[in-house]
Length: 320
Image 1 (cartoon, rainbow, N blue to C red):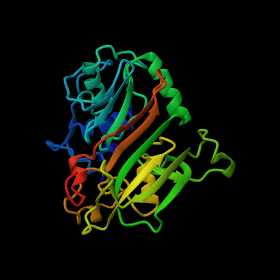
Image 2: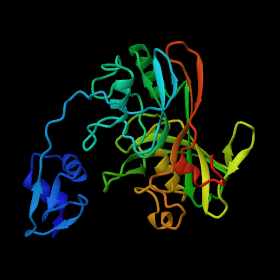
Image 3: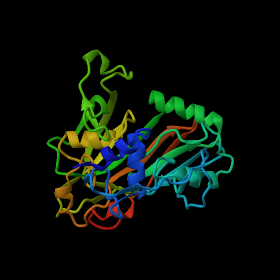
Image 4: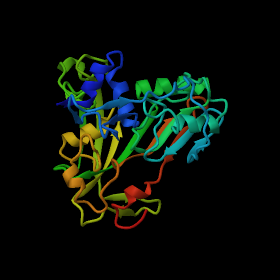
């Protein structure tokens, strides 16, 4: 017996592991006539494994008429409230139906801004993370946003996370190095690094500097000054996370490191605890809530906010 992905690597030595995982995830691999459930499933030498190679995918994403929730837009920028489940840009297993495909339909002149495959995209959100994402519509805006995101100046990103448990403190600051897990390459992990590199922000062999400022919120702030509390029947917390860096899975790794993983997080969370919740979360409850940035062209200050989506609002005392 061996893993399916290992068997496929032996059969197709020219394929990368990521391509094989994409083929399995997209349903192009069958085992004994049934679609393979996951790349890690066990197969034997007697099993019949069939791989159907998909047709070539155009290198340039095509415009698609996908509805967008636009929070702000002018000639240089568009800020979108991304729903959970929407992939930001084409990738293996997701060659269409992405935010980029929708943006190319919404902004016909977007193609070529900052690149062909990911036009206008400066930062990204995980597929199952909802909330604000800013996109450049002009090269001047693209250049300015790249500088802002790389220097972490003139921009503040604040997330909301519904997490398991309750931390021992009401707030804190996490500053460490995050990089690929040394064993499981699909995961990120907090890694050790020499002390002199911790504040440099430089890319190092043992990861990149990641900084998250977090605090516990007693409720979701509303415009009238009140706060909508979390349901008291659930052992969960509402965390506000203001990040100074944008590492892959940063908030999810950091919240898990303090014993309060994001509910619904299938990679760093606690599935057994998820199943005890009502409703059982279908995705990680992480939301890009507020975005404060200086307009890269006009210089004006933008303060934007995305409402908590319905599946996340189910954990508050009443609907948001």
